[in-house]
Length: 357
Image (tube, rainbow, N blue to C red; front, side):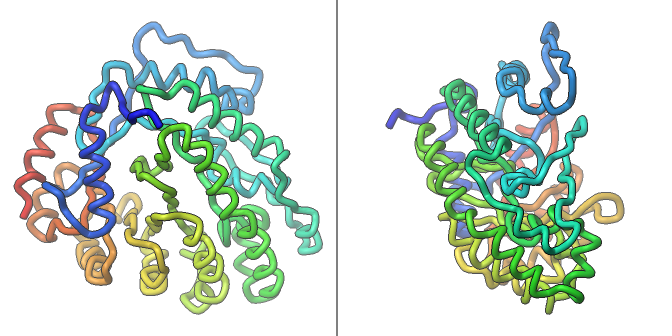
């Protein structure tokens, strides 16, 4: 295997070690800090015109040309990494079973395909599915161009209740938990059956890139890494979570060497004890939401609950909240994600975090 390197990330090795140490609740020299930026296109880059949005989403060559233009000469400071992943939207895994995707300029969604529960039998996972073949093509094309420039991520995979919610429609599925619980359980089982094979398959492709796995979360690990989630469960009770979500999640976390659970807001936090009981899940990502959910300080007691439960936590916060957060929380088990495009501010943030005790 070739030595892994990135020409715009000279400290790649130590940064990856910080991330892995964080997952296990340890600190090498300082807590890791993922400093995310928005990179505009450089002057002179020509955007292609397309007949439709579907073609635009699926043009891997142009998407990678655009990404390489964005990151050329950029600095990846702290535990931020150049990464490109094939992306057809959050429901692409559901589409691998035969459903169709509707593309919008900045996102996509699945056309609900279970109008009646008898429609479930028609959904079949297929490696020849056009969406799966496109993700495979995009991944392998990215791997052919990534060396020295960027890491290639897994596409966004959502099995379990989130997959079934896309097939059925979230509102209908909420009613089904009462009216058709056995059908829901059957559908969740179908959604999860190919998942472990999917992670293995994606990782076999990533082995071309030195056995590194990375997802939309942007944190690379040596080995298989997954971001379990169940956003639909923000609308259900803890009893329903135990019955309908946990069996799928217990199966899902077997797929990877490392799991970081995506806790998306207060609704998901209602199920925190069950989430923290998942095996092979060393870390949580806390996403507090928008508007009144900011600033981060109101969530410090919840974050401390996570830490006390033996989980490392990825916390998203504003640079303006950093001092107050460091005063309130111990650094052990914390990985910070901060959005800023100012390189000088990034360096100042790192200097602050180095003194965090």
